[in-house]
Image (cartoon, rainbow, N blue to C red; front, side):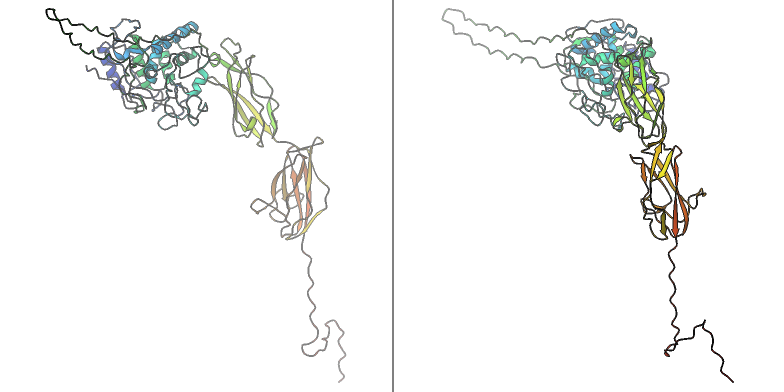
Length: 608
């Protein structure tokens, strides 16, 4: 079997058959015990439950399903099956089995620390090594400083939805330098939102730095152990790896390196590790070599010695040659890894929460444009029912409403206090009436949300009365000149912000809006006979300009408000006064003699 068979897997292009062939080849050559792809992978490497290798949002994975290295381990193993090899101070065995000293130290320290606090997880440090190899090539070949921090930030591509998940910025660029989209950061490639929950200070320098291999390795170990997983069980092991990056190809690649390292590894100086090339996005990262990294340069090689000519000899004496002793070759001692003090891991508070419980605070009701008297409140509890402090609870408003928290926000995050209780900020109703919900969830955990129902009702007025004014009268084609103003009260108090509906009807007994007669105008200048207005802070409402129309008669403006307040204002539209017709001239044209009035007594007939 060729030593190059199955060396690389391309994302989205390698079928399950090829992976299976590689597994068979590895087994035949005494490679690590490979875990074959799941039997449902006949269609090729793909994301769990989907046709793509990454989810659209990248939620639920430590890396946001970022790209990763796809090279598989070599077919020849570090040792024979069953053999173990302690870490050596020099390079030995296959180059790929060499792990930089500080990186290996971080993995082992994370295993030791987590096994002391969560022994049921059974975390093996070789799993961290397998993930570290696939995510960053062991921190870029071990290019870290004495404290374990990478010499240069390791950043994934912007998660902008173009070939990857679409994750908008969550850290203001604090970790990844990108204020538009998130990027995977550091040797274990955490996205900032995940690091905010799981970040650790494993080297006791007072910082939680995703670019530090000690901090990142311990955070990765805790993340893999989450939800009570036992990594000694195959199903839990697979779930843990898939939670890091939800791809079948990723799972198989990490398992290959994990089992490769279980066969044996050795230690190499920092900065001399082998950095893989092929990545799942088919691209080569900038400033990363395509061949194994070379050791840091040592002191210059000694210059060749210059031969010394023999001294001339005196007659009768044998010639003598003074030998030149070789100069010693200076060597640079291997830098011993810096082992930080052992420190128990800080388990994120969110991991301890088993459930949320609603805290009774009364009904969530408010009238329009006012604050709710009560706020949604929850308790964060562990498996035993004890309160958990320091957890971040997110409250989100959902539904067709304009209710909001401070500043118009529809969501707010609150940290659980010492009593284990989180209370949402003040919730204010908008102008819309109706119902909506407020959901409470634990940031960093997938637990059942708690939902609170909320209701917004309209402001009410039980009385509407016209402020003193003249009767409303106007002639057709003109505008009513009298002012129309009403006062709204509720239980005797002024009622500001009440919605009042004004409708013009043809008579006090009419129920339908009038089709002619007086009218208002809308914003476009078109006639309307129905308006909804709001009382001002003094409980007053003033009607806009009222036009008489072209149909004389008696009309009514009927006003109503929530709460039962009502009033009617009579309108009288009169026809314009008639103009008398001019009297015709009785004198016949040209005679100057007055014409006989039709009503005048006729003259007597002349005698015969």
